Image (cartoon, rainbow, N blue to C red):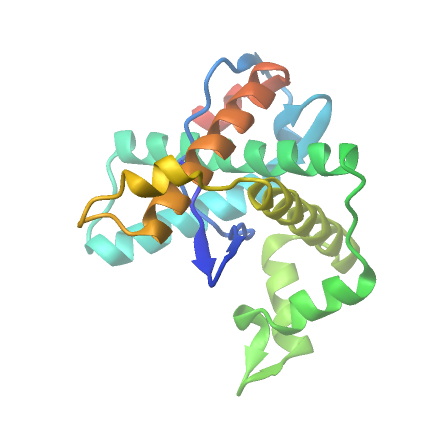
Length: 214
């Protein structure tokens, strides 16, 4: 499921380069290739293998620290599949954001980077931490900033779609003591956006690199 949080009446989805969430992908057309320069292609657009490996290695390290043990091969395979699905989700939402004529300005990107906790030192953006992070990832500033623009554009699309969803009176009247209006609204948004996303997946050509599962 796509994860989200609500602040007041706005719905904002969190998708970052190191995000790790499970996404149910239905009806995907998945093929395999021996090429080693990409993790997956979505409608012909490549998602770099090095980006996938960076996210995967960080996820494994985080889980092993959390559980204080090494993960099994089965658990690692599940992480690989989930990360692949997250990266596919990012790309599909970005591609659809262009259909809706959504874009991200340089100023929006600058604010995003400056407000990123991973780049801050003593509460202030640190250029040194930013460059160190990019070296770890193996990406140039131009490559990473293009990636962030794509992710932000995807978030904008989710917010746009979510803003069109309303609660009807009969839905509010069906509330019980254990369910708040906010919970009901969140659940409806989550359900509708997942249905929308699953349909886009069915209409997309998704080609995965089999090397990542070895």
